[in-house]
Image (cartoon, rainbow, N blue to C red; front, side):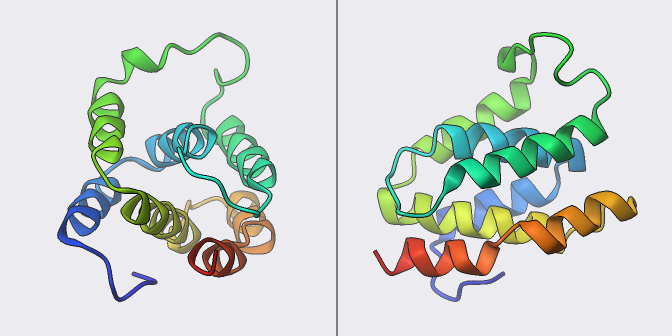
Length: 131
């Protein structure tokens, strides 16, 4: 974990997130970042573009067909639990979620390079927590 002051709700949600497949981690992160429910000065669009680029590499059907998020029931449950968090917990969870992705080995050199070179987790953390 990147942060020391996470609540039990955030830690439990991170444990659930850690058990997801790599593809589901990226799919859920994209969904949450697009609908994060709080404002920050950080350019979230860049993160979303990176996550979608990775998802295209992980899921060959992504981008070719319309994906109904409802077909991923476990991700719907997860996003519902995310909505139960207060504003500060949501901010911390998004940081930890992106940090989890940053630390994940996707067993694909190009994906790992994209994440390591373009996913600015530490910058995002600084902006979100210091607002």
